[in-house]
Image 1: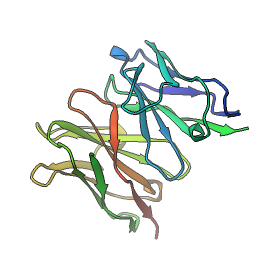
Image 2: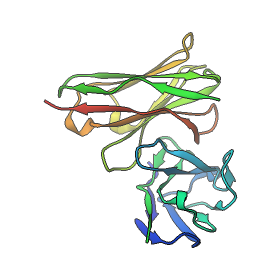
Image 3: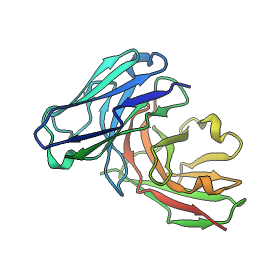
Length: 108
Length: 119
């Protein structure tokens, strides 16, 4: 199975900062079938990005995704207070679908 | 607006089974794939398996092979996940999630069902 490794594990930042989260795959993700999710405490995950770079419906344009092959990134151009959460990447290019272990973005 | 409404919380004994349901409302069912994802307390997301109701094809994560069964009732637009031989390690929130028939990103998530396994 494809193992996804996210880094860093935790980021401590202030509102307004720009951040880049990394997701590295153990094998190439076919067709860039990689998604990003945001999860807040007590809530279900919310889809942000699919196919590496396409924003899901209703997602603000401060969120952007890029990458291909084994290296993918999620960028938030300017952190809003509501963006402090845990972010997961997920590959769906090969079964079994797998998730990264998550990156927590916390308020500094 | 599409919603996935899951069954209520469960408390189970070790060695028993649990059956969680997920009903879709406000949208289609058969033209999508339904997955089950779980999250142990304080841990990350773990994909368990999926079903494509229109053709009945299922895929399971190897970790759960032999213990999990995912089914779908097209007449009621409801998906089910049964997990057997429960241990304390199965204590988690279980989510259903919808994705496209030929894609795997999950755009609609269920409300979550807490399953606690305790003697």
